Amino acid sequence: MIEIPELTRAATNTMRAAVVTEFGAPLHVEELDLPVPGFGEALVKLATSGICHTDLHAAHGDWPVRPQLPFIPGHEGCGTVVALGDGVTDLAIGDVVGNAWLWCACGSCEYCRTGWETLCESQRNGGYTVNGSFGSYMLVNAAYAARIPDGVDLLEVAPILCAGVTVYKGLKVTDTRPGQWVAISGIGGLGHIAVQYARAMGLRVVAIDVDESKLELATRLGAEVAVDARTSEVVAEVQKLTGGVHGVLVTAVHPQAFGQAIGLARRGGTIVFNGLPPGEFPAPIFDIVLKGLTIRGSIVGTRQDMVEALDFYARGLILPTVTSACLDDVNEVFGRLERGQIDGRVVIDYREAPRTPCQSKHVD
Ligand code: NAD
Ligand code: ZN
Ligand code: ZN
Picture: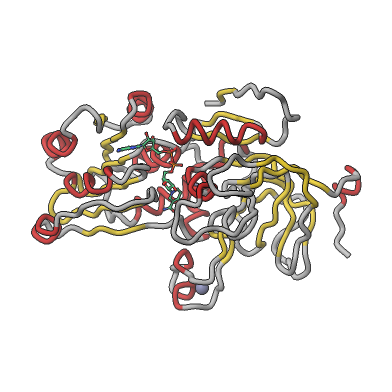
């Protein structure tokens, strides 16, 4: 029998969650039974959850491998452990933890053994193959849950759990060094945090987006060059100003940005793709070969990358721009995300009573 002290006090065994019941249709906010933690798992009462563009791809069924319906999205959730399943030795009730896209991996395959657990073929993904953080409670795997540093703002730290760790790892695998140029294409939830990690890692930043307010945000955050991909000859301009960048990180949600990224790099440069819009892009074989370019994909980060990414945040080097919302706003937030109308990240705050209509507030 599992003890759930807080729930006993609250005399409830249900939770509210936003559920995807049909791809491309609005999410339903429903009352559901609480999940029961299995072996090695913990039940977490959520305080906050970021809303990532990946959640929108998931709800639309955008990718070749689709989640099984119905499911609860969300993989930037932070909250308090309220119950433990059997076999959990390294988490205690009251600990503050987060879920992540890498919800768990097998721990024993070649990828897991060699520091590439993000490539494990048996991994499970938060908010995709395991129910996620768009609900007032969620399950985490104790061995893979992120440990949230003491005393941090839970609204602000939430985006580090996906956006932060993803771009931090993505920047690492551009193989750039302090003093070199990196272009960040797409200054949304991921990209505005990428500008800050790049600066903290000693890189010089070129920001590219199709929205003026995103470019203004990037400049405030320390980008030396900001280019509007709609109005300028992006490649020529970046080449003229920097001589070609050493690294490119693409977080944009349009395939056009992927082909364009190849032109931004100088000889020997590395182009890293984080963004996951459905689609394809043309790649110039001659340029890639003659310039000796490296093009690689990068998916979230390992548990160690997560520890490091959270540490940058805890030391005050990263300040996500966050706007709070309530769970019932999720469809409206998805609409704005789709139209590119969100600066930074929207984060669900479960600590506030549901309001209708919800008054969002800025926290930056
Ligand atoms: P977002 O909607 O917050 O930001 C996307 C940004 O791209 C917006 O600022 C938008 O204006 C910009 N954009 C659109 N078209 C562009 C273009 N042609 N050129 C430049 N910029 C353009 O989304 P997000 O939450 O930051 O996620 C971005 C992408 O990254 C999504 O596809 C998401 O699924 C993916 N993602 C991947 C990983 C990973 O591990 N690889 C992790 C998280 C998210
Ligand atoms: Zn594995
Ligand atoms: Zn994400």
